[in-house]
Amino acid sequence: MINDTIADMLTRLRNAQLANKTSVALRATRVTRNIAQLLFQEGFLSNIEPETNGMFEVTLKRSVKTFKRISTPGVRVYVNHKELPRVLNGMGISIIATSKGVVSNKKAKFLNVGGEVLCHVY
Image 1 (cartoon, rainbow, N blue to C red):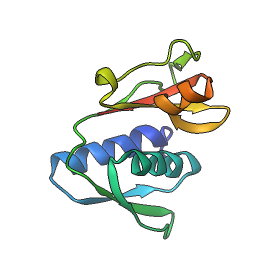
Image 2 (image 1 turned 90 degrees about the vertical axis):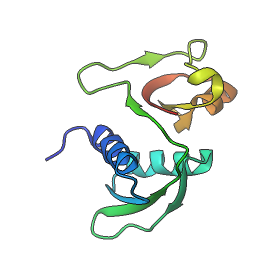
Image 3 (image 1 turned 45 degrees about the horizontal axis):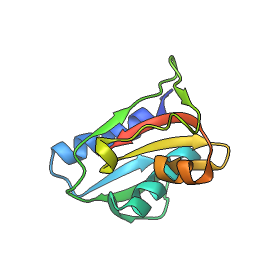
Image 4 (image 1 turned 180 degrees about the vertical axis):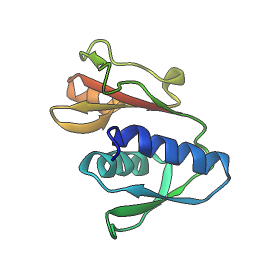
């Protein structure tokens, strides 16, 4: 049983990127699907396949270099709307779990909401 599904997702994406794989299968949970959809909208993923047997498959783009988990189950990191992090001076994104759903730091700033910083992608 995996306790941290977000860290598992990021590790699978990072390992696939390092092994020069084009696609990777991920466990299908509500949070991982929302993060994958956000990465697709931001242009870090090129395709998301439908869910089968509790897994879904994503196709990576070569532009992604780093997936970094910020908030862990042991140490949660929360920010308000004034302290939203910028990743690589705006070149990357920070994924934030807010009351409005899982959004990027740019959209959270637009919505004027804070929340839990899940990870950085650049």
